[in-house]
Image (cartoon, rainbow, N blue to C red):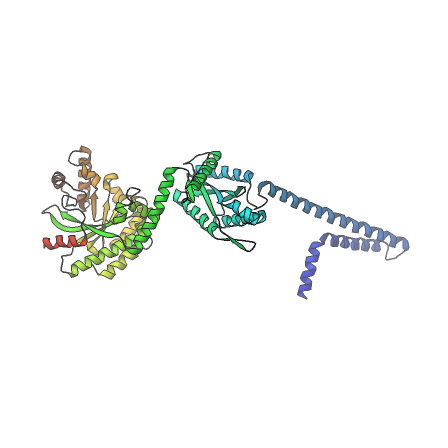
Amino acid sequence: MRSLFIKWIQQMKDQEVRYVGILGFFLLTANLLAAASFTFTPKMILFVLIQALICFFYAIRIRHLRLSSIEQEEKSKQLAYLAYHDTLTGLPNRRLFEDRLKRVLLHAQRYDQLAAVVFLDMDRFKEVNDSYGHASGDQLIRLAAERLLGCLRGSDTVYRQGGDEFIILLESFTKPEDVRAVAIRIQNVLDEPFILDGKTVTITASMGIALYPLDGTKPEQLLQRADEAMYEAKNHENSRFQFYASDIDTMVKSKAHMENELRLALEQEQFELRYQPQYEIAGRKLIGTEVSLHWEKGSKQLSKLMDWRKAADELGFMVPIGKWAFQAACRQMRDWQNAGQEPLRMTFTIQSSQFKDDHFIAHIADVLQETGIDPRLVELDLTESITSSNVQEASKKLTMLKRLGVRIAMDDLCTGLFTRSGMEGMPLDSVKLDSTLIRDLVDDDENQLLAAAIVRMAHRLGLKLIAKGVETEEQFEYLKFLQCTEVQGKLFSSPLSSGQFLTLMTKKN
């Protein structure tokens, strides 16, 4: 019964005009009958039939006009679609692509972002056409277009230039490495075999990448340079995609190499901890050590390309590396104490990405509980830039760390304003004079004035003050004159391995 009702409703929707006409007919008939006092004469019956026919044909005409209007509207939409899209793939054609390109560049300029034009050419496509026929070639183009759309964001645009060439427009990026990640994703989806009429076909693609505004600010410049970069990629057998600017291409590929090496180093624990002794100025007594992270491969093979610590921070590796380093150092401290060595303070440098990590404080607490070391012997060294970006949030986190019992040190104060207003709400224990300040301390009057001001402020706030990078006796004596309390640097010792530092502690005892 329900299905019959639904069917009737659908019929009503399809022929609504006709039903309106029939209803009008019955209403007209009723009025005529009422006017005639229900007396049916041949003349009246003929008149009613004529009225009914008029209503019927009127309803048919309205329905015809309505269907014609709908058909015309659909044709207009289809023509408009064909005017802006490729007939084979349904992708935007050049007219629509150029319009979107202009809008994307305006958006990138307004919000100070990067945009990328990627020129893609399918390798050996002519062989597919010659071997399997043009129908299979067209099928390959359609399947490739579907894969490209599937691996990109909805805001990105894929345009078929013609033949086996595509142009891809990527918007809203902050760094070239993000564009590289998209290029790899495109490369991977096109590497998957295609099935053409039951036959497996494998292809590759060469891509050239031009970045706005680094490679050009006008649409025609970016298109031309992406095309040039694509041909450059084809000329290099091992290069599947190429950035137009050689320095950007080298930087992106170097960072990609660095990323792979860092991932491997983390998995295999290739990192090593070094320990730089810290001394009390009065009596030159050993009071602690600053833990530094060392990576042999990063220091030797990759240092010419970029600083591996900075790259690790940008690539998201510094958080897991930092967790490993803190845990390993605390375990080393526990081993030294179990071997009978006197407990010493251990300072850890904290990167911005570590401090911002949601699990940073929980990890510190877990390691302290696991190793059982005295939290008062642990000092976390933060740069001024970490806390200055969001003072309120930083103060909250530092307060939580202080509740664990650890010490907090502030570094790089020679580059910022060391004022009480900037320190309010920061639960600090010590501050550091950076090595760049110490280097010219003896001969530079401005450095001397700044160092003296920082020392006075540290004393006023009841903070310990340690000078980094002390290399000469003259620097040491001047710091002693300024009443600095602690020092570290090559004058006393370079960073040592765990075994060397154990030997140093043994001699001290």
